[in-house]
Length: 130
Image (cartoon, rainbow, N blue to C red; front, side, top):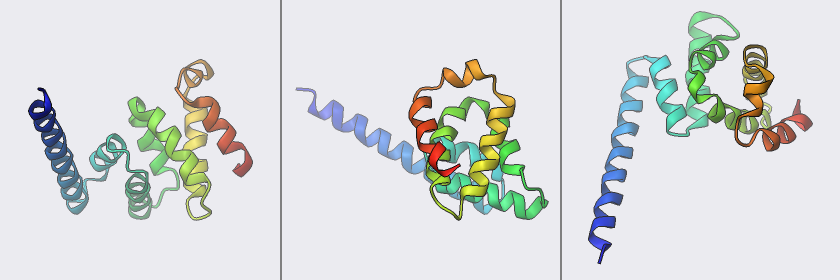
């Protein structure tokens, strides 16, 4: 019977998730947006990623700060590609999505973009709104 082991593993995962959520909250409170951005991407929180980017844009007065930060976090480009689809379908977020998409297209080689899982469906979803 492995039920007890599975319950302990599930509880450990839940505790880890809670700790990461708390860390994200603390980072946002401390205004450490770049680190919060990375954690939000790893937690699959597209809205939080967008909020972190918007705050940085407001603070620094630069339109493409979010794009620059996404470029820094290159290991999360696949996750960001998924977020682009979500952001691009909403008129409030479409400008940020377009800026991030422009950065990805300018700084990633076409061959590396083709290696992303889900690139075909993402492009098909982005085209009607772009």
